[in-house]
Length: 101
Ligand code: FES
Image 1 (tube, rainbow, N blue to C red):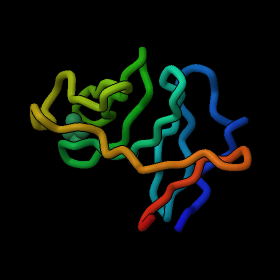
Image 2 (image 1 turned 90 degrees about the vertical axis):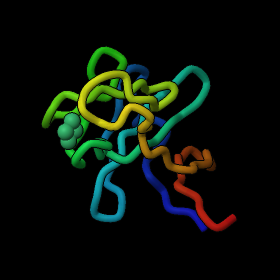
Image 3 (image 1 turned 135 degrees about the horizontal axis):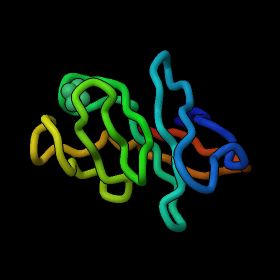
């Protein structure tokens, strides 16, 4: 099954797009040739993330995550935590969340 997240044309060349996702939000960005999508949720207490200087940084207590690997870089989120990436597929000019395939 699939669910459209956004149009490819709406994803900026740098930074991220925040798209609605089943009543929540996801960040969508270009990482080299790939397009990545991750829940807009910090792995500490669930705060919202801002895209800053190539990192996703939590608004609440400052945890920072690498946008290529998803790894926590600093801050109070657990050391081994990673961004919650979505499984996606590009099709017909859209980025789709896919599951159960
Ligand atoms: S909720 Fe994100 S650093 Fe605390």
